[in-house]
Image (tube, rainbow, N blue to C red; front, top):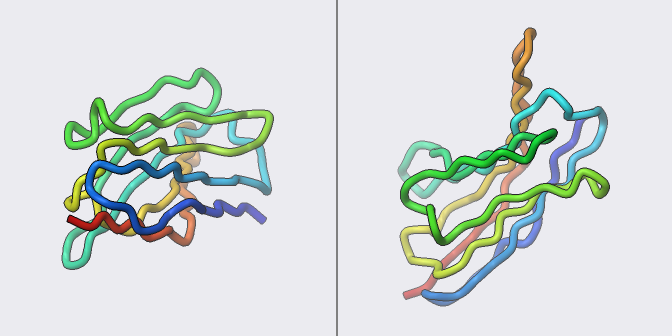
Length: 119
């Protein structure tokens, strides 16, 4: 059974930092792109960042570029999101995502972790 389990969310002041973790298990992820998405109250879920499991290639939403860093540790089967210079608009539930890039294409989601940035 595939599982993606997020941790590391919490309450932080503006300008602070948090590190989110996503522990993955249940299969190999060599043909997957791993990502973080977030959903603020009343808004649609949006892309934050992705990293390819094998090569570690990354991409970021413009809103977090330069402040957030996505990475993965293949040996620990864990993906991370280092968040610095946090802003109140970063407040959201953050979801871990794994998307298979070869057919059949399918996606796994974690249960989410709350990040709240106080002003």
